[in-house]
Amino acid sequence: MGGSEPCGGRLKIRAARLINPSHAKLPKMTRPPSEEYRKGLIYAFSCYLLWGLFPLYWFPITHSGMGADQILAQRICWSAVFSSAVLLMMRQAGPLLRAVRDRRLLLAFVCSAAAISVNWLVYLWAITHDHVLDASLGYFIAPLVNVLLGRIFFKEKLGFVQIAAVLLAVTGILWLAVPAGRLPWVSLLLAASFGVYGLLRKLAPLDALSGMTLETLLMLPFALGYLGLKAVQGGLVFGGLGAVPMAVLIGSGAVTVVPLLMFAAAAKRIALGDLGMIQYISPSIQFFLGLTLFGEAFSTQRFAGYLWVWLGVAVYVYGVVRTGKKRNKAV
Image 1: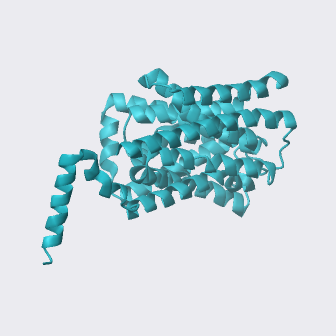
Image 2: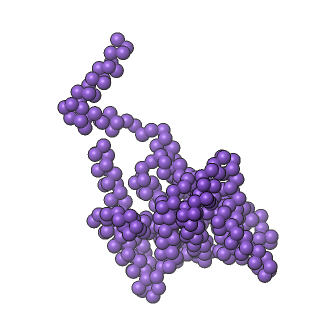
Image 3: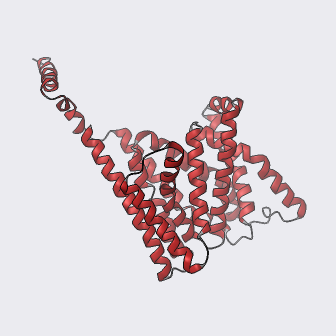
């Protein structure tokens, strides 16, 4: 008797296929989210929460007298040390060594290292010069930049919703730029550099840890050279730092690498649409910190510009949700 029920169940499914093939997939639709999917959500929320709290992490060093240039060089050095140590402990050096021997792949990573260096430098400058709100705007715009890059380089089709989202964001940027007489260059540089970085990493596939290790090792000679030059000129700011700012610099390697590994773990477990919506946690937290902790001014005119961008983001998220629902129905 115990074996007759599974057999009957299989016969019912086969009968359902003959009558209507879509019925055979109904049991999958009612299956609850897997444990791996839940883990993916935890990794994603944790990753974007940490990225959102970055201004808070760097806050102790913003008034230490160290410029964004030296902070960047220190971050590269400590990130290279931490990522290399983790890579060796996990015994995953093979992919990195293969990438070094591949000239085309290595060139792609030289370019991606340059792109992420620009992104880090602009972000650190924004934090140390009271432009956290501009930084948050940049990461609100970033997904829309990805949409444009996908259209330009991969000929991805843009639907009405995506076009509307991009146009609304452009309207917000112009709203901010015209009265002020200048473009919000911090926001645009962050969005563009991060978009180019994502594009290059897509063209040069390598796991997150190996890729970050290779990029930081490629940047390491320049970072060490710059710090050495500053030391010779007597302008190196490190030995005179207090305990907390120095701990922030040394810990920057772990703070850089750990969220990246969480992101990679999340991307393997959850849908990209879900990941795309969760990512807005990060700029939202940064925006809140810019208003409260950093006390940045936020005029009505500036709010109107941000509102256009947020409207574009809302339209983009609506498109992601609608596409996800259509795919679920198709399954």
